[in-house]
Amino acid sequence: MKAIRVREFGPPEVMRLEEVPTPVPGRGQLLVRIRAVGVNPVETYIRSGSYARSPALPYTPGHDAAGTVEAVGGEVRGFAPGDRVYTTGTLTGAYAEFALCEPNRVHPLPANASFPQGAALGVPYYTAWRALFQRARAVPGETVLIHGASGGVGIAGVQIARAAGLQVVGTAGSKEGLALVTREGAHHAIDHQDTGHLDKAVALTGGRGFDVILEMLSNVNLAKDLKALAMCGRVVVIGSRGTVEIDPRDTMSRDASILGMTLFNIPDADRVTVTAALAAGLENRSLRPVVSRELPLDSAPESHVTVMAPGAKGKIVLIP
Ligand code: NAP
Image 1 (cartoon, rainbow, N blue to C red):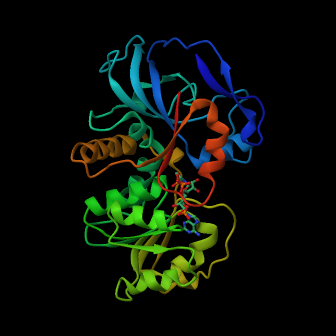
Image 2 (cartoon, protein in one colour):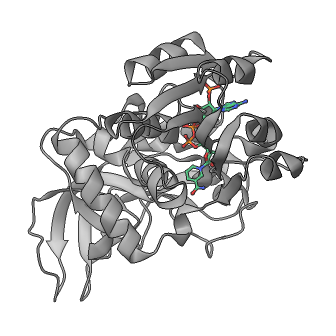
């Protein structure tokens, strides 16, 4: 099979398409034929060698994919060859034509979701759902600011929060991104390039501030986010690309909380909860992953440049 291999950490060009043996599922494993692969920013950090968790070299990147079950190993129940599925992790890497997976990381993909949409589910939708409900404990009627709503996690957050009855304000940095955020369900969209955008956002809550903020770029925004929270507000640190100085008094005056998260820490029981919630959302069409670009698998280096560039409009997907 064809697979992207990384033999040394470094720039996007260290990802090369190679011919490698197609894996054979052992006991308790599934082989998935991959039709689409979701590209996430974390895969660029891992590839560059700058991430806290580095795989042993050489490796095949990627967690999120969608396709069909190709073969079922011994003692695996509930799957049959040909089943449409998406993954939330693989044993051998998702940037490939096939991937070995543990059954608890393989989930049914409803007929109304395409393979590229299925590849957009894993990291983005699980992160957004966990941030909103398992970390921030958001409830219907609360206000949420999704700071960076035009990207993979942000669009998921907008759709999930809107369907759950929250008042949603989303930010983007381009005209197309703002239109997308509104189209996907935000009550209001504002431009995070505008220096006064948080004041505008707070004005949209009648000056009360936000109950919840999902933050995609904490090193830029966290200090100001704290001033935009309502009493007992919670900000979930989802993304950060550097350090930031905050005034702790901004948390004291509001009884506010800063909640960090990384999806790698999600317990299995919580993942099962999210899987069920997403299945319902896909079924009733409140969740509709937005794919902005489909590229061939050998364009993995280009996909890593694009996913880090401004002007997000949804998910970048590789097609093996
Ligand atoms: P993405 O698809 O590349 O989207 C990035 C988002 O950040 C876009 O909406 C972008 O908006 C926005 N952004 C750019 N400048 C911003 C600013 N000044 N203020 C607020 N937002 C800004 O990435 P993603 O998959 O959604 O992930 C978002 C971040 O969360 C990444 O840093 C990623 O590594 C991290 N993440 C963390 C976890 C976790 O477990 N903690 C899980 C998934 C992702 P424009 O392009 O419109 O400017």
